[in-house]
Image (cartoon, rainbow, N blue to C red):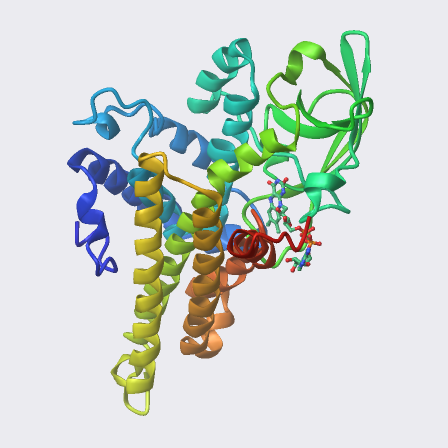
Length: 394
Ligand code: FAD
């Protein structure tokens, strides 16, 4: 266990079962052996490693017997395991964990929570086995933080069909998806609904956003919908208001706190590798006190973030999970990540801005983590509302 999580000074990973550790070791080995040699190249070239999605499917995350050993009656992998799964992938690369997160989290849960019994029975097994890929299309060019009341994409009912018009922005992995849950406002009721759209449908145009400085490996896209026809039976039957979309968002916000923590561990690892190699004034820079203080701060930030995640996972497991807890974790862990990658970037000097030293990738990717799934300010406002009873934003 120590070899797999040397940076876990609070021994949180000790609470994992043997089966969970075995799974995580297989995952870590796969990432290190197969994907390590080309990860920075993919980041620079903004390309997705070809087999990644299929390899993740083969791990059989939703059903793997290793994750159910000693957990009779459990239907999903434990929440603590889910934290560590995100952690291990994020420690390796933040784009890849995001790609997995939009499929397994926001996308999958759009179908799970939003689908009728028949839709769940049809789509969930295919999504879980990775036979079908999905994503999550909510944000629009003019509406990010205020998406709850601001959606401009419309859905108009015509007989047994709906006609969708509008534009979505930032949608991660839509160009790789087979089915896209698209959220649009019903022009009659003014309430948002969810629709299952296929990229090859007439009127759907998907463009990859170029020149991102963060998460370069995951393609983010603009989806244009021009009179796209969706049959009523392809409408997600249980999405009938923003509260139903919020349920999906809320189910995965803890996941971003988990990713932020893994990314911090990746940054610490890249920094440690560097300081033990790099010599200045005749000795390795790891031997200098000012360097060690920054490494200790990064380690301290990591311990804080890991313990918040472990407690969040415990709360989720007990059904005590709430909005303030997840917003606190997302806000604080993203902040600690941002602070830590900046220290790591500083410690690695000029080489720290070169992709080949890894830290540049974590430094840049942290900016996206800070913004998506509720910006720092929006999570602060959710916490502020709970503290004061006053909503300062809606
Ligand atoms: P804005 O909402 O325009 O905010 C700009 C600034 O104003 C922020 O600092 C914000 O905190 C601040 N602000 C806004 N309102 C207030 C207020 N009331 N008080 C104080 N400050 C305020 N969306 C999807 O639907 N699917 C995806 O797969 C997806 N993937 C993404 C991947 C990446 C890399 C990124 C960057 C975004 C992704 N998003 C996705 C969208 C993401 O959720 C939004 O970017 C996010 O919600 C913020 O919206 P915005 O970028 O429009 O910023």
